[in-house]
Image (cartoon, helix red, strand yellow):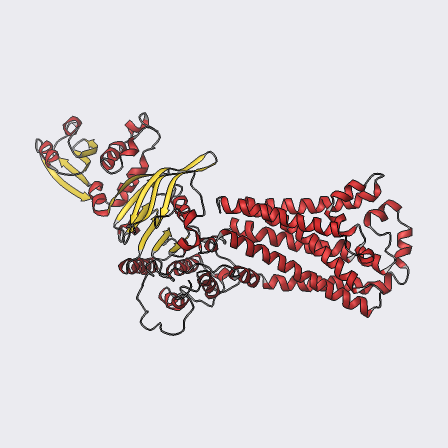
Length: 296
Length: 328
């Protein structure tokens, strides 16, 4: 297939006004494995991606650079001492006086996940549900491409975008940690970045799946953001309760952070849990997306 | 291969409680331009979106090229050019970039024709999509539907947003596509625009076809508007129940009515009085179209009796769409 379909520059002389249907001989549907949709979506969002890249890099850069002034000088420990013990535990500031604790509490425990989730949830909710709702997906869906392929390529765009932003986080932190001689190992930094990527991917995937299953952007955002906030709160409350271990067990935030990945590395069961949280909804929703009415 | 390219058999589509299609039947043959008429909400877009496999029917069956859209999949859609009824385009990319992308989704089919079509429709390919007017966006939609020379064009309200000059250009292109073998299925809520080019026309109302015929027959059904003026007042009974005559209005010394078929009986009835003026005008097809919408389908009797359109409907649908008369 796709033989006559190449954008030929050769002989279009005689074709000026002649409208010649291909006569059923050689219609050219999208080749399997093609990434036309993925490339188009990335292209359409290139400006937003550049903006987020800059934002993520700047925030990471600023926070890591604060360490010599804040942590090294003992300012943070002084601050923590004046705070109630419970609050300190809830915020995960117990170890904020060490470089690893500082990075875990700021970039990897709060700002990184927030930035990545704001980006990931809105991007994931828009790519199927949002564009279906505003009608811009209709031409793509009426093109010779299977629904499943549209779905998969759009999902992969979310994965790639999040992966890219996490690489930016990793590059900035690894670079600055080395420059400021903060004594945190690069493997640990990469491990925690991978954990943060999986965390953002998990909730973004939930949003993507909810949107693709329902065709409603608001549902996608509500489900994704709702779960993320609940998970964060559960993780924050766990240390405050006498018997809070079950909260850690059900919170994806805890799956990512409870093992203190900058010290002990990423928890393997935790990481696998995040992968499952990403892939199970995405796998289930494609079935629904393939069957339901689109654009209603 | 069968010569019926589009077929709907007892097509039903429910949205929750609302029934959008209620046993719709139609066949579009290879090489024809088929007009699909009805107001907004009659079920036109629902039918069309089933053909594109964006909606799945609740009951009944739709076929394109002899295969259900769901089974036909991408291979089937590669042979269709589709213009959505509510075309939504956005983004900072240029019209040219979007058209290139859409061609790439078709394995590159149509890429080479984009500049030529853009010139014909006077569309600037270098302008960003989100800055385009509704008319210019519609041009993008028309071009992407035509560019790959599809065997079947499915066009949902194609001329909406185009100015009269471009409407004309568009209809010319549709005719050219037909002349070189394409089949065209186009919807509209304005009869005059399909009347010009369509061979057959189906009128859809509340999810059913209420009339389906070639344009010439429809025009015959539309009949003539007859007005007679008499020297003295005439009794209304004199014009009751004449064959082919309906919608009689008697007002002192003048009679207006709708005539279909031979004028003989009407003339003989009138000749009993002193006729001072006489006029007979062909009705526009538009009027026929409106006739179908004056009567609520769901009322079998009751207010329909009081409605002058009821007799018209009985007259026009006889022989073409008897199922409108069936109690629901």
